[in-house]
Length: 301
Image 1 (tube, one colour):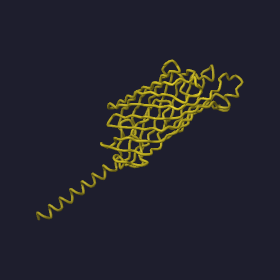
Image 2 (tube, rainbow, N blue to C red):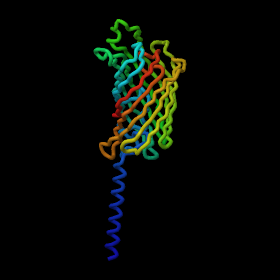
Image 3 (cartoon, rainbow, N blue to C red):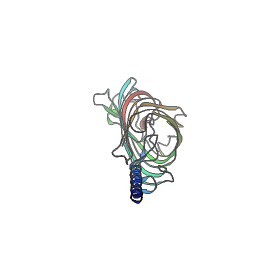
Image 4 (tube, rainbow, N blue to C red):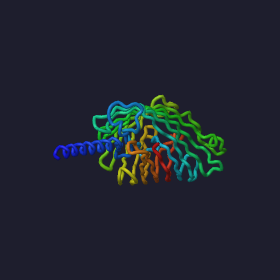
């Protein structure tokens, strides 16, 4: 009876180990700041990987994401307080990632693009005010709670035709376009995330556009990695163009993650209230200051 018993024990132990290994393999590596990588892509060279090792900045008005928000405030297109619909369509595509040595660590190269637009909801035809087009090549890195993004990107901006046709319009169209070299360093400390960096703009049009921009921020999350949790964030940008006057963006709300299956990184959506005060983040109004508050729905596709 001893040999059959030992054989059965061995088979049972191997089965339990196999099931545990399978469960671990099927579980994506999730970061505290909201994103993650596929369970089978945490190490080695991976072509066209899923997920990313650098989390999207919650309160950055120009973060690559898809969103629809309602805003109310002071905008350069009117002397009165107006209602504005702000929308964005953005996503990234990972090209290659080298993972390791620890699960979830690595360096990744990708491609991303976005369109940001604002509409005057108080006008008869919801006039388009401004559109910014952005395409970038981000190189992201992670080691434990430290992550970074080095990015080259192009932005061009255009005023809406309806705005230009207004009889009372005093805003002059600028042929605004530039390339930027950006570096952001980020550190996660439990539920808190801090980041800082800057940009250098080149190939600037018009040539009166100044080159330097500083960027800092903080994020906090309260709740489980899976399911609903509370989020709050502040993002501050300060540019040479506006004599280093800060543009302060504050957002807070509820974040949720949805999994197609356990092995995939999550799709993240958030419902956020927001407030902004400072130089306009919208391209054609870069010489103006704005202030608004509002709320919206944001998706990380």
